[in-house]
Image 1 (tube, rainbow, N blue to C red):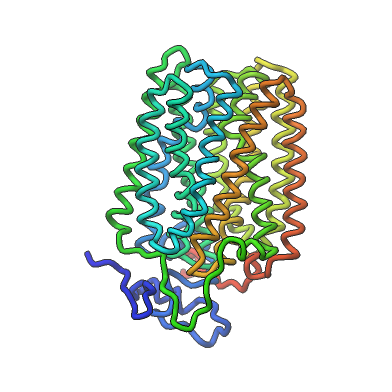
Image 2: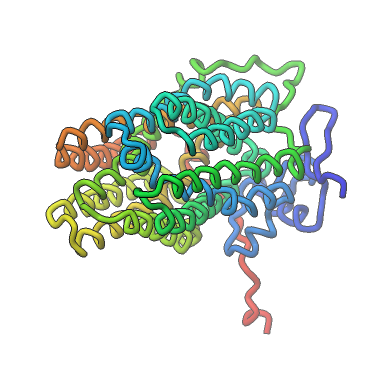
Length: 477
């Protein structure tokens, strides 16, 4: 079957016309509703099309977008099996000191941070596919090595290899997504993609929670090998169905030179968004592999099964609510959505902190699970908005670097999160840990308020929308 992408004289790839894409392009807002856009002038789908319902969203996607989305849950299953239990594996199974274990978790992000900058430049120059292939191969080798790591030095090498993939996969896959879809559907794609990622991670967390046994190291070896095998799925996708997708674009003869990272970060909107991303990860995702499991085990004194169930609840909330939240936030200021998210996250940390007053009880277990459910509700508001703002601020020639900045901020928060958690929880400062998380959540809301004054309305999600609703059978009768 021939590829639906073709190369134009300018070096830009365009999607061949089809019945569905032609209808979407005709509905796109291009400045005047009376002037439809020719099919050949748009990559993917129209910029300001709001898709209502999963069926119409799926129909709106080009073939490449469907391939990317259809394999997400399966390829993240292995990651879900190891995500909640990596620090437990280091500390309780291999006997590493908790501080060393936290440092190893941070080393993943440190490595990712180091390679993210060069990775973004390479994505803009050579394309996301080539860079992602290197990252995926590194991840497969790293997970395999980690499965048999009995010494901190071996574990350090393994997590650095995994970190290489972390550093390039975020900007790489986001660049692929942004190349395939545009505008409001791009925001919805990021949201649905996030829900599917969490579906795979959540199911994997349940499987891992009931499978692993801290008294049997072989069970942990197995889940890390499964994680390595899951990396073969996106690798096959990139080498197969997505082999014709190009994210790099040749500049026109009269095009101005593209600035480097310093020039990009001089934009106030990018700077404030980067700070917001860093802090969100520090008090959020940076604690998912370190602070939360360690607090749940040491302070709340719940079992690994409860930890696994809590990740499953996290997934269920995201999968069940993500599309409904997307409908609510479409057309709304993305910064306002972030402020609501910040308050929700602050509440979630209050819930987790309260479990420390009744350790080892059913109430503590319920509180740990409730924490992850409330936290997940906030996640449904964060993930569709931040990547969309970055990609709306970027041009085709700088998309890799903008997503690399996003990734660097993420990795920075992921570095500091486990380090601070390891120091505070290892030193018996559980109250300070919870207090810092609550204060950080409120600070995210303040940063969103500042960002709103710096970002232009279009990048903040304030655009004219054309709706595509699901067919209403009652209406046609």
